[in-house]
Image (cartoon, rainbow, N blue to C red):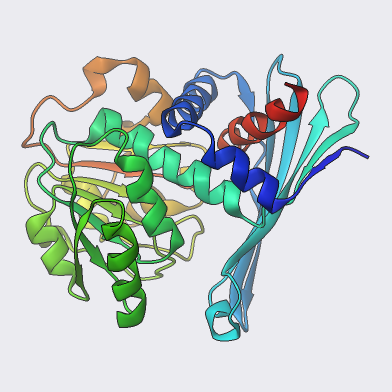
Length: 319
């Protein structure tokens, strides 16, 4: 039996870790992945209709590393009516040398939230306009909050417009993020976000586009991270067609899921236009060259992120 980490222990480690250390670790993971140093099998998933929910299995290993990781994460979107969290899950860590179980991380989905938020910061650091006027967040839930918490380490902007579908949730978001120094406006009008924000993050389980191509201003960067199954879609595919730069965290995964998947199926996006995130990070010639360019990052979530964040937890035990 491996070392068992409770959610409380995991939260304490994360809270005592510099967010930049987490961001840098996730960035290194993306670079390793795009350089062929990570083995990541296809995502396993189950989709439920009644009630609506999903469970993902993501797993893999970095070649030559000490461990391999298997993560199970779920999202059931009516849980709020029961007074319980939307997300749950755990991470299993095994020795890459012996196959023995070395760690059980009972994070209840928290590590998935952390590594996803850190990925948003990784993207913003290399793709956001030099001057961010206002940050737009689609999704007033926990992930929407965490995106801002991690963005503040890499983006110098405190003005925010958050879009949501629940007024109470929006009001709570405004209050909580104001305590962290953000000036938050709330809206149920997607157009208000597009008109005022040149850095937009979408973090919802939407199955229909929230933003249309004619709403997007020149110079806008969008990080879309909610569409991690083939059913979900947050962006009008025409947005990807007009973008100057389109980035995927995993080109392999974008064949089956995400915004790129939808745009490709619609005949709007050519494969040759898509750059993988780890490649873009290393090759500055592929990055934004003007604050007039429209750029898109489509993040479907890659197991190397789970590997990197799990190592940050288990390292504390070995230390």
